[in-house]
Length: 418
Image (tube, rainbow, N blue to C red; front, top):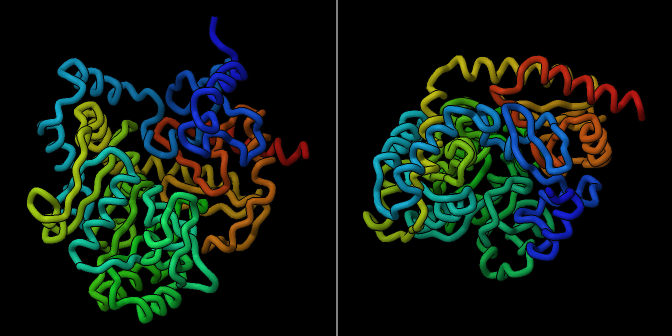
């Protein structure tokens, strides 16, 4: 007999810290006493252990551009598994995926495959430091680049200040070279470069912020970062873990026409399996071992199951019609949600900032009041959105117009019943 949701939760609490393997999954921020447990999914829907079927706008936090249990992806993984699940040696699948990435992402000439976005971000930062022989890095409040120590910094007093460790276990010295600025504040970044630029290795940024809700870059912001890096002799690093292959086949850099020196990729690039990558200019990437002296390695990097899934997805994304449909569905959803607050969208990622009229341009402007109530209201009506105001909705090819309209109706009903 299958365990109930509560039984699974109590079992999890006895085995896993906090009962979950990634904090947001606990859903405490939206007022649930216990999270649901997923048992399956198909297309735009997810099934839970307590027998519910939910319209899913999270899509595993963005990777599933063709929806859950996409038949072509599943078949590609099955065929790869029959030949062996891991080798720890080069495979042709790694080359095929690397070719897709290099062909799609404008700034990437060489690419290294890894297993997670955190690993890719951490490695890109090490490479930037190794290439420039400098230590400092500028990041932005509200952007997220994984949980590597140098990125777990919060701003000190004032703008553009040296970082303060934001988590126990992160030595203060590790974040002492992390400079935290406000997103979309080009003047603040310019001041930071003027003050700290002599030792600046890189500016690390989400070209479209996706970890404080969807926050587009202000006009000229990305261009300013490019110019400041060039002037300081630093590298510009785009974290496109979310935006890569989602806002355009070539990512945000293709959509906005600003090219970084290094790019971090994840989520869609692995087709829903644990795979990420970082790549960029040949002269920078050739500093990686074994070609160069900057060390990076991984036993499961380029895992054949993950590369098979990634190749299956990325090859289908060559078709521009895919992005036409994603734009249409996303625009339909954004238009339907607009009466309930500020909707911010870039391609197939969007956020409703409920009850708000003015745009959100930086983390300090974010107001999460009321989001938990909205989450629970939609959950009760069979619609699953991210259990955090800091995340986005991720439309997929599986979200039909009918699913979009069902979601809009659920939001309307929620507010009508308040």
